[in-house]
Length: 212
Image (tube, rainbow, N blue to C red):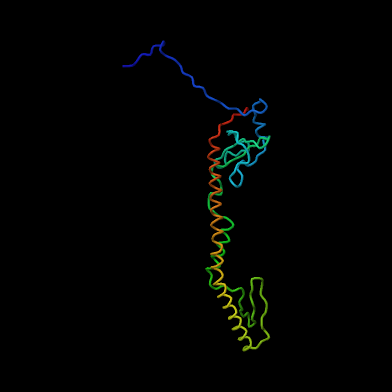
């Protein structure tokens, strides 16, 4: 059975909604003024804030609607206002690739390569040529075969001694470098966590309305 509502019992309840506006000198900031605010990063490279955040403005002044998800934050540094574009997902969240990681990779590769020599001798059309990283030059072309053979054997022995020495040094170099690598990666992880924590806090800022 359909219930009949008596008009004397009906009432309308209203909810109070707080709208915060961005004002300067008691005047609401307009789109033109907002666009003129200097763009500056609010979050520093280390994850700290460069100033005091005021709130979020849901307006894209630089045609950035096609960018990845981001916030426009109005913030204060000293006596000046700034605006900052803050990405919700930083670009560097793809891999922990730091300078120390590159050095470590080079050490691993050098440790892996067993045929490590800085130069070697080959014969091009009967003329011995020493090939080095910085170029090549004729070597021993005036020697007879026996003398040249002695030079080659002596050269190979020197190279063998060098390889044995490198075989001992390379693992030591990598082991000595490991703590530096661990510290660098840990520092980068902490920096990124601090950055992400700041982004989460900024998302909870109030929305500020500006005049058209």
